[in-house]
Every structure is written in C-alpha cells, then in structure tokens.
Length: 133
Image: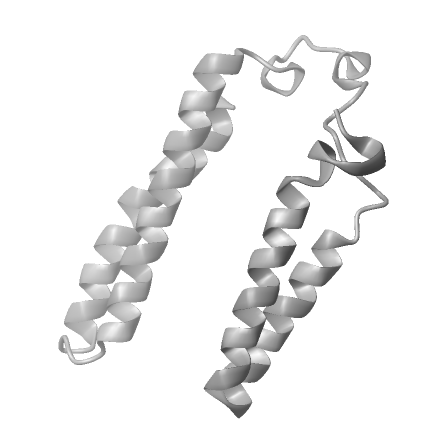
C-alpha cells in the first residue's frame, strides 16, 4: 500500500497550494471553492495516512512486489453477504433524505429514522437469525 499512500498523501501538497492560488485568483470572494479544495486536500491526507498505517500493519501485498506471481493474489478477498437487503434499505433511506431536502424538511427526519434502522440492521446482521456467528 506504499504507492497508494504516497499518491493520496501527495494530494495534500497539491490541493492546499491550489486553494491559496484559487483564493488569489477569485479575490478571496468565493469561499465555497476555497473551502471545498481545502477539504479535498484534508480528505486526501486522511486517506493517505490510513493507507500508510494499514500498509505498515499488514506488510507487503503481492501487488506491492515486482517479483510477485498472479496466483499469490488469488483467494478470498473479504466477506460479502449477497443475501442482505439492508444496503437496499439504506439506499432508499438516502434517496428519501435527498427527496426531503428538495420537497420538505419533514421527510428528511423520516429518512433519518429509516437510515438508523438500516445501519443497525446491517451492522448486527450476523448477530441474530439464521446467519448468527
């Protein structure tokens, strides 16, 4: 993960000066763009730091070595539950939340309640029922 952390980490050194240049070019009158570019730089720094710490903890992957073979990256890549309906419920809650922002704020509160239920259901999906661990 050394390459990924370097790419994202270098985004900090790109986006912060760009935000200052953008501020000078707009006469410091357009604060949304300046703040947006600063936040993108901060996000790139957080992702780069996370990938750097994870890379030190996990060690070299086959993708990081030049002498690696294709078969070394084979196997299970994670745990995914193809029968889960909770991501669909969460997506519906997010769509309803955006609908609430466009139509009426009261709909957003209903969507927030649905989103909390969906997140709790998704997190605790393997703690109860047929697939409990």
